[in-house]
Image 1 (tube, protein in one colour):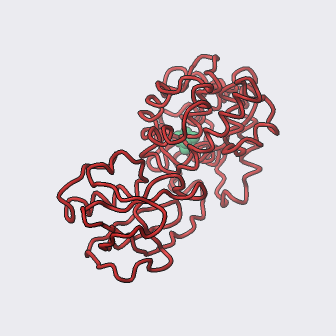
Image 2 (cartoon, helix red, strand yellow):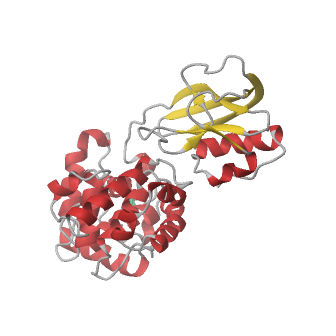
Image 3 (cartoon, rainbow, N blue to C red):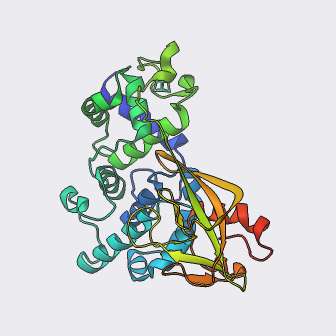
Length: 342
Ligand code: SF4
């Protein structure tokens, strides 16, 4: 079967079975590039199912790039809470300000210029151009890699054959409907050509697929996964004589920056006089499993820049998922006041 026949089969399948997502428009049309931009930044490291309610709430509050550009970063954090990887929220805001101020609200339709914007790498740039402007860019994510490797039975490690995968994916693209093609092949991977138990009998490409019916199908694509690094550390719940708890704001740099936290470290013990509570929390970052032992300390002087807050007022501050876990674990055991952190 030729590439154009495969492309047509895929687009026909997509028209009837593609996912209806709040940032998507089907049938050859394409959504507002701002909508694509917000959804693509949210979808970095986060699943579609998790992103949908956050996206809907976010777009209701910031319906255009101008509203987002004019917003206060702390308010954006409130809408981002629970999505994690907060550097994405900062990049989103910074890029919105540049597009609003320097480009009159329109994204440049030039890959080199788009790649200069904060938070936009090659994948997001290709998505923005293909999905937001219907330009012939090939979008390659994990779903596309899986579909292409199975369709052509490529069983070598994907890191070694990426140029081949990109070339094959590009060859199947539709000249008239690159936006729909990009969404369709991703949907095929997400819904039909799934990592486990792919549904080959209902796949639009099953007649041409070189992997269907083969026992090793779930081993394709072949990937080398780096092992997770385990790290341990301490988190400190420091109280004053009124029972208020010490929190501080992380500096505007690196992981979890700009959010509030209880002091913690995975490198050294910050307050040797603190008493171990016997409680601990674990959190998985991309390649790190971090376990924090919860320690308690009474100290009326501020340990460093930060403030003491009554437990019932903690919910007014944006905290990372890791800190919410700390409070959930220790709050009800060690404190009689206080609400769940939002
Ligand atoms: S036939 Fe099966 S393995 Fe091949 S692309 Fe379709 S779902 Fe994937």
